[in-house]
Image (cartoon, rainbow, N blue to C red; front, top):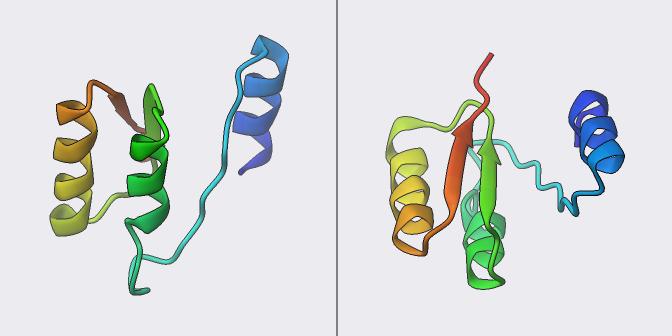
Length: 72
């Protein structure tokens, strides 16, 4: 997880599980799917690609999780 996010989550007492994979890698959504299965309440995505990003956003919303696109 990048330093700024990690520090903010720690300061707020929020549990966060970082997952960083290159978009071109097979299994790109696997950690995100696992987070949803494990009951994640929020997914913070940075630069989600249009196809897989849309799919994981739809899956998260269907499960009741909030999605934040932190594309800078």
